[in-house]
Amino acid sequence: MEIRFEQTKTPKAKPTDESKLGFGHIFTDHMFVMNYDAGQGWHDARIVPYGEISLSPASMCLHYGQEIFEGLKAYRTADGTVQLFRPDENYKRMNNSADRMVIPKIDEEFMIEATKKLISIEKDWVPHTDGASLYIRPFIIATDPYVGVKPADHYLFFIILSPSGPYYSTGLDPVKIYVEQKYVRAVRGGTGFAKTAANYAISLKGQDEAHNQDYEQVLWLDGVEQKYIEEVGSMNIFFVIDGEVITPELTGSVLPGITRKSALDVCKAKGIKATERRITIQEVAEAYDAGKLDEVFGTGTAAVISPVGHLKWGDKVMTINDNKIGPISQMLYDTMTGIQWGKIEDTFGWTVKID
Ligand code: COI
Image (cartoon, rainbow, N blue to C red; front, side, top):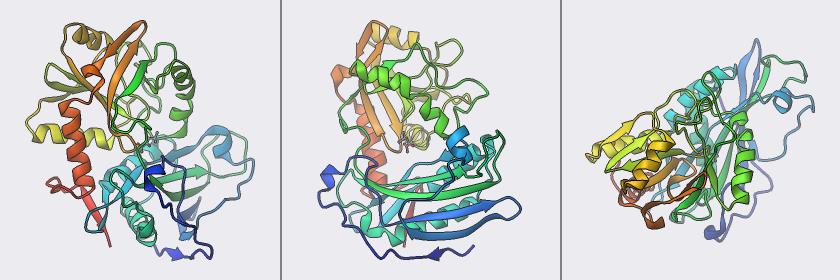
């Protein structure tokens, strides 16, 4: 499909101080848009000036949350090349989310091509500073003006771009996480594995209560017994117990993170034992009491590798590795960011260059 291009007549000033980007506040000059209409399929692919959109107040996405999204990044390497990290994995996951939310799928190759074309137009917006990148947010919304509950017949697909720094204001300093015991994020048969707005909306109450106790995020337990560890919501979670790296297995209620998958691959390539299995919060607390909980860290596109310094479960506060980043977290951070920013050789073949 051809991608039409309409250039902005009012380009914005680019951020001058890249140390103050924050995460997800600034948007570039252009966005990708494409329509879906039942009977016609996806059509009218275009890159147009970034700006407000007009929607009927009755649009179905606004009422019943028929929406999916993705998150990936473009990185600028030292020689000025701009590259993506495993975009095929993001768009494969987007189609899995589409299937769960009864949204029409889009050809994965085409989504990669659209992303590359948009970024090559917006290349100058890719930050130059270490640790900063261009966050890419593809998403699909249901637009039928109808307040009955059914899968929509009309959709819009967008890709917007945001030059961003670290997701957590703490950067690589350990985050404080609180184990959620009252609310749940996902249940078996639900939407936990999909990247859809509902999973994030449902997390806000727990997150709000965690913030009130001076914790940054919550760690979700399984929705049935509230025993097994699932994920943080903005990232997957890993534990290093007695030298072994353990992350909850993908049971359908956990997001299949691309950084998660890559971190497991890096551990295996380095000869570190890395296991996906069910793990209870009780087991983690017992490992802590026995002095065997070496490290805890989260993984995510936005979060990269985020060490966890404090884990609070009820009245028990576990201080991990003296609230310092541990050697496996540091190795994973250095390897992942090294590959992403082109500082070390990509022996996995994960990076995709943008012309
Ligand atoms: C990402 O890591 O890209 C995400 O989508 C998480 C989001 C909460 C920022």
